[in-house]
Length: 333
Image (cartoon, rainbow, N blue to C red; front, side, top):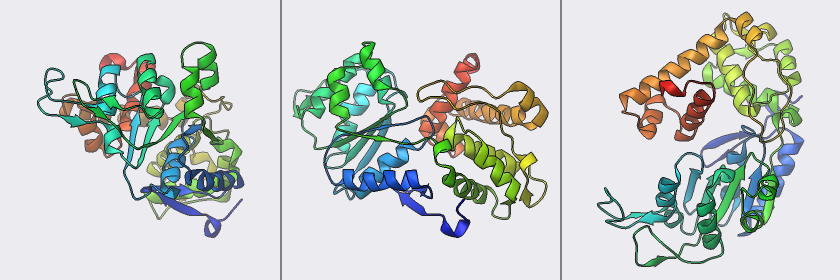
């Protein structure tokens, strides 16, 4: 296990990265080579493994690094809004379109656009995206003048797109166009040397005075991390909030006991007995949920404003809301 002095820290477009393990260093070496081309890149990996970080690294190392970076989650918006976000609209295109609005492809001209959760893209949007990737000019919604954009597309998914293609849920031609270069992000359980540096980084964010004892780091390294880096951050945050001294021990870590899950599978819920034994796990989750709902209520359901109020990204808020809905909390939204 690497010690803190050996931790390798990088920053890509403002997003910090810990690259201590050999698998991640090999991946970043590949990213640097891939970034020099204009090839479309498809990043695959489990939820929470760090796909957006890799996408940002592609832009960081590319010849387009001084040009715009634009990102969008394909699952965050319904089809009609997604189309207007990507391709823009002209004045009068629909009720409320009082002035023209450039789409994200136009805003990313000569730069990079990152399409997260590409597997969620609606079939009609798949067709339009394919044409844009092939260099065909497009119209804004309600527009009469075609738009051309020089954009490098980087996409990401936690689903097996080959399976979606075989099931007829994703276009095979679009899949092959997106995967000119495919980068696979290894799950955290295959990057054991990253666990301690990441844990220390997250802990320092919460309280620089705190530290892990040796046994706590051993427990973290032995955990399977089905939720990957996102799960690790949550575990460290909860341990830091409830720490009674300056040292976090193994028994202070609110870890659930479940096995690794394959990419694309739905995350399991915390083991109820373990949550009850820890006592605070459910309470903290409920507190977080309540804060999010209160922020949404205060902003009349405007997710971007609510995310800003909470100090989190729109992407994080969207994921939280999906989680609550799957757990039966959707009625309260």
